[in-house]
Amino acid sequence: MNLSGIGVWSAHLRWGDPAEAADAAAELDELGFEALWIPDVGGPVLDAVGALLAATKRATIATGILNLWMHDPADVAAGHAALTAQHGERFLMGIGVSHAPLIDAAEAGRYRRPLAAMTAFLDGLDKADTPVPADARVLAALGPKMLDLAGSRARGVHPYLVTPEHTALARERLGPGPLVLPEQTVILATDVDEARGIGRGWLAGYLKLPNYANNLRRLGFTDEELSEVSDRLFDAVIAWGDEEAVRRRVEEHRAAGADHVCLQVLLADQQEVPRAQWRRLATALL
Image 1 (tube, rainbow, N blue to C red):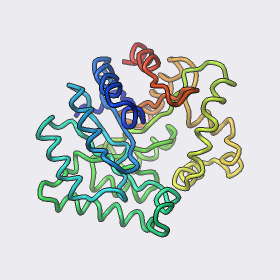
Image 2: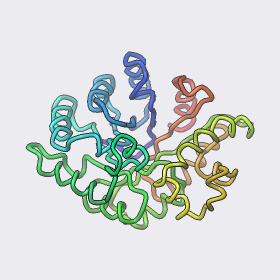
Image 3: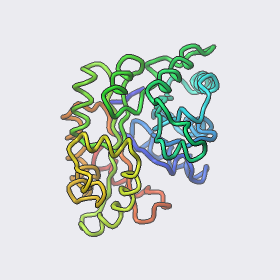
């Protein structure tokens, strides 16, 4: 798995029309994106991984993330083994603990001791009939304890909704060996009002989730900034502008210690697949 370049993070590749998702994945592979990342809130996520592996020839297919509360580690390990046998070592399993409001909505009190839950899930992957190797998995780590666990039990980390400053903290905590693979949200709009209109509501939804909010507090943002989605916070989390603005942000992550940056493109119509924007980014960055 080559994880030294730029990837794409896309919910459309997970939940969009399967035929269009496969066609888009094939194009992204041909354009030169190193990895395609898809989210998970339960359901047949490994089926989606398999479809994307079948549609591509070179790119790594990664979960960003596989929700540990919604899957059995033995089943996941068996699925990983089958996909690897069929497609080679191109499946990177990103694993995360999600957020209490999402997990407890279906079963109150289920979300507890997330670090222990992650440790137990990794133990299950290790004890499976065909274990998932540590170098085939990364953790969605934001805080120091989860970063430490990733450094000892996985190939690295896949932090979501972070800034280059967090990338630097992750690299410092992990040292030179493990991979740091942050997600970076981008909006290709040069008008500030247009960019804010596209991204502010989207970002406000994520800021209601405690893991993200707490991580941004650790980075120095205030409760007031979180509640109002301040311009400073918006600009720190979302790279907006033209292709050169996105390039600068990617280089900031790289300078801070990132090995790979996966780009999530936001559009005004979030149902639209941003294929034109992916092509623009490929031309400018790859």
